[in-house]
Image 1 (cartoon, rainbow, N blue to C red):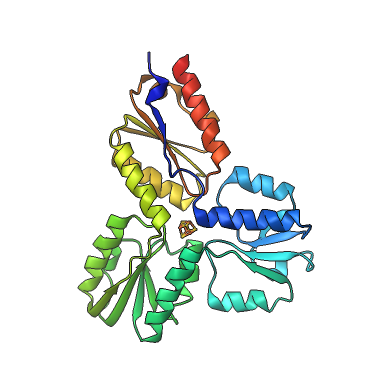
Image 2: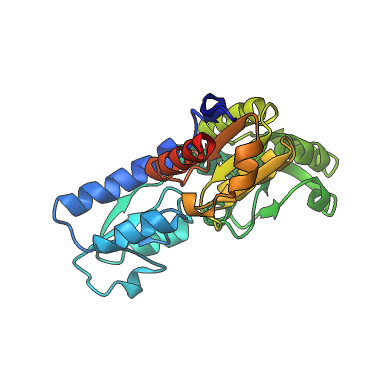
Length: 286
Ligand code: SF4
């Protein structure tokens, strides 16, 4: 009979400090009577949280012109936006609260500093991700996004390049890509802008997942950081289940695994992780 003691929940699972800060800020605004609250794009990619926020008149829009009630507050989410869009948002006449994560701001500042000195910026990340779209705005029109070393092989030759990373990038992918970029530049600066919470999460995941027979990754199917975490685990453990809620758990592998490791993306709320962990333990007690 499986032992429920062999179920470990990651210490780093769940909201990262940047996402938590943005959600707390929005909830504080709502609680202080500032309604409606509009976020520029979804605050996080997690349906359970988005449903709760919508119930409190906190909703996502793409542009200030979409705000039905101009007396509401506009919140810039943790991912940040481009400087030109920031200007547009700030000149909309609505109250604006900037909840850009300080660690994303750090990446934006590094890009700005080097761009001002004529460096081409290469961002290692997902070109369509909101954070990367925002970071590109700081390159002074002199930037390229590559997803990894293969895409970096297609880069032209530059005089000066600054390589930065999406904050949630896998560290090995970042350094392998930076090595390739070096071959395409006379001078290459490497600015590892992967945030510390992501580094901690990756380190813990690598240590725990390789000792587990089954890893359960909890988080939104549309969350880029959860999908990347699931991919990382697939390379480390025999079996991986990526679930949004406890209802999607597959019981058979849970019953047969000796050691189970449960982890979650940066946009997964603690209560969802707790419910998945409780269900896993209940299945193993059957
Ligand atoms: S993943 Fe890192 S940089 Fe991004 S919001 Fe979270 S703490 Fe900030």
